[in-house]
Length: 288
Image (cartoon, rainbow, N blue to C red; front, side, top):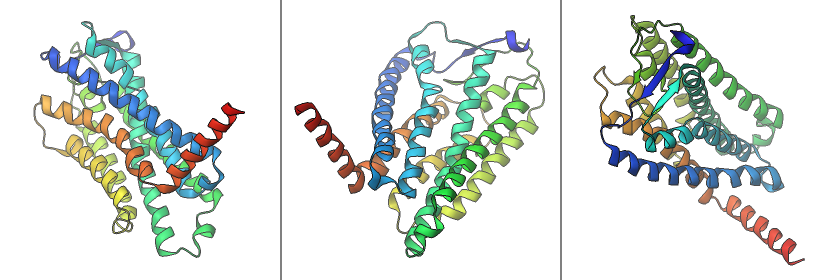
């Protein structure tokens, strides 16, 4: 069947009123994600005072969150209001692959950000030397590269599975676990690969994060929400997926990217100062 196959995204089709409510909530949160992360990217590019490793990584995180949410939220919003909740095999694989790439990349990037804060706190005199521009670029590239390779591996394993007719994905979007559960063969290898990937990314990230937890409450908040939800989604005992499970997965996909700019930026005096300065420049430019 392969490329000609069409999937039906079940979501919460049995609760149409809940889906309409979710449409409004997700639309508002998506707008907050765009309006919260876009200015941070612009500020880190335009303001020379923000040309530091911390804001370089924050800019990467903001761009990552926009890409991640844009890979599935627009189509999900359409499906919330549509009677025909179908998606082609190719679109499903692309959505699944892009989302998984962004999620895996964020796992690594959060660990990189924790290492940056650890060096800044514990070795402030050598911080500019250790966290050089070249190293920051290499660490960001490594985050994106590892995320892509992890997603590529899982996606290749998933699309090689045989599908024998079942085409109802028990989720709002093409999520990899929901996708492989449609295969008419043993999926133990896929489940083990996904679990191992998550364990490796989580453990490696935890080693860097725990060094900065005592002084970086903002990072702790983000990490707790981000990884707590991943642990629930991918490491809970096997059971029939419930509406609660799907809502928690939706929480992971939408709420965390919305919280990142709020937690990292709006409480940050340097970012707020750069924002006010940019607004004053814009005001004087219009007056002139």
